[in-house]
Structure formats: C-alpha cells, structure tokens
Image: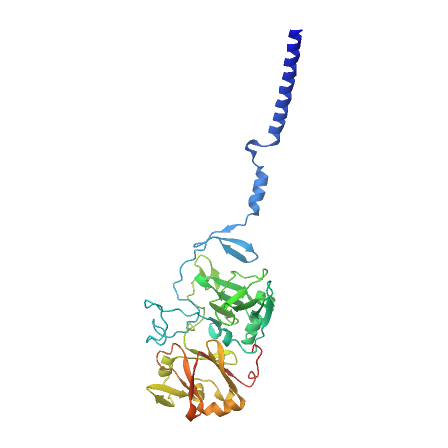
Amino acid sequence: MKWRSLTLVLAAAGTLVGTHACSSGAESTSKPAGGNAPASARAAKESKKPAIQRGRFADAVQVGKNRWQLLNDAPPPLEQDELAVDDDEGGGNGGDGNGGGQRRPGGMKKKRFGQSPVYVDGVPTAVVAYGELPAWLPTRWVTLNDGRKVIRFVLGDYLRSLGVPLARVRAVHLYGGRGRVGIIPGDEMRRVKDTLLFSFTQGDQGKMRMHWSGDVQVSDSIDKVQAVAIYVEKKPPRWDRGKWGLVDDEGVKYEGIPYAESRLKGGVRIYLDGRIAHLLKRNRTFERKIEPARIADGVPIFGMFDYLDEVGIAARRVTAIEFLAENQVALRLEGRTLAAERAKLELSAPPQSSGRVLVHLGPEASRRSLEVTAINLYSSKRAKAHERR
C-alpha cells in the first residue's frame, strides 16, 4: 500500500510539472525573445517621427506646412549691424558724434529700442512705430482669454495704408534676430491679408511684434521684427539655409536689405501722406548747402517750408502737420492755426541733439521750441484722417 501511495503521489506531481512546463512554453512562444516589438511595428513608429533636416549651422524639423523648428539655436553671429533703426545719429557716442547719446555707467552707450524700417523694392518707405503709423490705419481691438482688450493692427491694412498694391506683391520678408527671415509668399499674403496681426511690445511703444495663427504659411515665425522688406516689382531673393541668409540667382548672399542703396538709420523722418519723403540729418543739411534763414549761437535755423521746397517736398500741398515726440503727437497744426504759423515755422538741429530737431514756433514775443523725433505732413486728401486717434 505504501508503494502504491508513493506511486500515485509521484504521478500527480509529474502531471503538475508537465502542465506548468506546457503553459510556460505557450507563453514563451507568444512573445519574441527579449520582449521587443516586431520589426514592422518599430519601422512604422520610426516613420512617424519628423525628418530632421541637417544644416550647416543648425538642424530643424518640420512642424507644419512650410514651417520649421530649430533643434538647436545656434545660427552664426551676424557680421552686419542690426537692421532696426537706431535713432541715435553719428559716431559711437550717439547723437551727432559729439557725445550726445545717453550712456551707461562705465562709458558704454545705452542702446535705444530700435524701430522696424519698411522697404518696398529696396526703397525706404516707412518705419513701423506707433506714432508713425498712417492716421487712416484702422485699429482692431482683440479680447484676450483673461478678458483684457488690446490693440492690434492688420498687416494687410498696413501695407494698403502705405499704398502698396497687395494684388501685385510677390513676397513679404520679416527680419528677426540672429539673421532669421520669415518669408510670406505673395499668394499667402493675399490669403491672410485680413487676419495676420501685429502689435507693439510695449503697447503704444516698442518694437513691432507679430501674432501668428497656426495656418499661416511662413518660413519662420518671427516674433519681434527688426525690418520689413516688400517685393512688388523686384524679384524676391531666396533663403539659403547653408549660408544662413538670402541669396541672389547666383547664390551670392545679400548683406543687409536686398536692392537697398543704403540702410535707413538716424535722423528725423519727414512723412508725406504716410510715406517717408525726406530724412533730416544735421550733417546732411550742411552737405546740401541749404541756405539758413538765420543763425543763432552758431546754429543754422531754416524756414520750415523753405527747407521742404529745397529737398523736393511740395510744401504748397501740405494742409496739416503733426510733430511727434517719442512716438506721441506733441502738436498738430491745421486750418487757420497752420495758416497763422506757416511763415514763422522754423527748424534747427543743434549739436548733441541725438537725432532730433527743434521746431521753433509762436509769435516773436513768446517764441517757443519743440523737440521732435518725426514729422507727419498731410495733403488735403489725408488731412482729415483720424482713424487711429
């Protein structure tokens, strides 16, 4: 009996061991060795990863149609100066080169917040500063998620306000920092002409800032804009990632703004109906050999309307004037007020004026001077425009 019982126990144990071995074998056949996924699954997963575009200075992945994101922010340092307008004129001390600019402790020049110049086929046309926007440019109010209402401007409206024919625009280039350029093709600019917005970094002050929506086809989503180049008649240059810049048909890299004879910098901008008509610089007034109306304390003083005629602006067309100081309208003259002041308005640019001019006005007994950074002239066609104000 003992032997029989022992035989039954051993048989049962053998059955259990066999059952466990079979189930372990079944499990081992259901999973590949090492627990890895099949090769086809791994290949499918890899195919979903965005392709990396290798560049000379940085690598990028495509994150949308015609949109790329740098994997490492390492573009080369710029050899040329920034393209934004530096309102300080002259040498390293600012002003007219005689030490008029503001300086930090230790003698370092305090860099002023440059504005964004606009070039149309290489011709300086405007500067994107709040006070220098055309008065007929509409304002668009936008409500943010937190309920605040903020001012925005439509890029297409701005181009139209400058007289740019949108139907013929071939491309718009937005320059950012470190050599980046956001390229909007002409057809795309026309598609988003009523929806692509911009503002300023400090409300009604600061630099031009873009507000991109997800569906805009642009080569690079520039945030703060250093310069704007618009191509209507001229052929737009193409971007060469290897050279990290715009190149011509021969592959030669452009330095600065293509087709521009000179960079827009310094001085007081004088606008006629929203477009730059003249750049008033102290040193240039001597080069032009314009005869001053009088000289006071060694500083030449010019009759304003005589000066305008000398530089090719038809002064007789001007029916309203705005004098701007630091992006704000300091004084507006029109109608009878302008008629009374017209013959007595004078301009001067003393040394160390840091790119500003003085406007002298008022009767002889109570003559006063106004320091200005820009001047808006209006013909009768535009004199009544107060859309933005």
